[in-house]
Image 1: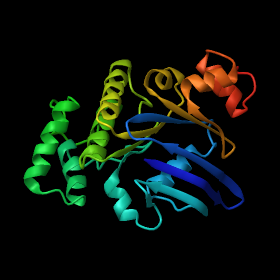
Image 2: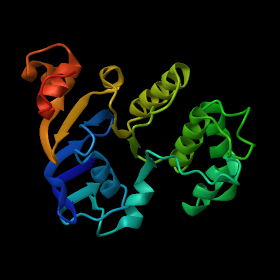
Image 3: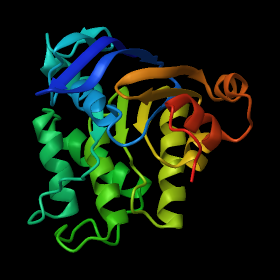
Image 4: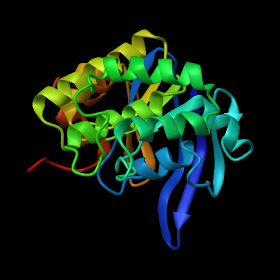
Length: 242
């Protein structure tokens, strides 16, 4: 389980996160929604141990992210908004490097790499250097890298951004399989169709504050509309969509 309790973070005079609280459960997919600048990426960076909060608490499997970040990193797999691959390394070398950082034994690491290459259908390109990869290929390698240690908690920051239709569908299937395996999946997205198809729960953030926290059906009921995009616009306080 991922827990965020009264989390606050400022950059200079800009309050990026203003005391937000929510939870993401195991075996469920939770969407973190909000307009640009709402505080989504800052929250995910804190949960990923890349940034520290000014106040409040963020916990992964009961472990406070600032108290024991190394223990948290063993519990999480992170797909950042920018895949951040090492372009001089092949796809497999990128994945193996992260597996070694997680201290996975060589034999087990090779088995895990082979399984992910097959699962993510990377056979045709995984032995090439990642320089020149398509966006879909980059996302697959970055996702394999995030999953190499079989983490219980998976954090995805706009995972389908820039993907074509077929790559998006393949990634959705993978996310659903993570849920079926009992993983806790937390991801941000601007695509309401994607949220509707995948998610059990929704957290809407606006101006660094939580505007809604509940199931998709509860969001529709609370907003008084079946249109998920309209419900999001109302909860985020964005006014009428253009």
